[in-house]
Length: 196
Image (cartoon, rainbow, N blue to C red; front, side, top):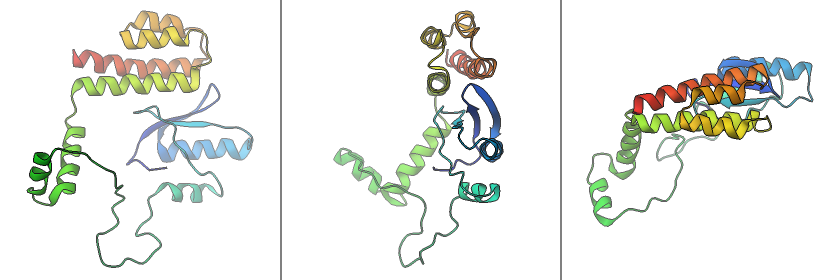
């Protein structure tokens, strides 16, 4: 798992809400459930993305929390070269003029690309935020409520921004799933309204 700074996340055990809050708060709540019911398989979902978050729940609560933090310095002694930044090397394909421009920037191509990505993340368009909020709500519904009656209709209503239809199709869902789906759908609708 790659820890986020302090993500808002939510945990469900089947269709029952365990907790919502910071990763540490939710992990502690899930740990308490697992200590009482070791055969249960709760899910922790990142509220911003709807992605499932993997956590190693072995050991005591303090050990579980310690594993959420990135290693401070790592285990291996550092030698000469760049510090460990948690970077991932991947191939990027650009035209020669793009490489020329990147290499002429202070800090080189990698530093410039990181700055460009951070600026784009920080200043993302309203349409991007709306799309991401909708994807998070839809992913949550698919993972936790995909087996519920009216799921497909609710998903279509979510993407249309049709609150009445969404509420109608989620009315019969278990209370915790229904309320969380409606909260995420409201965030997506607000983002869609902002995007125009």
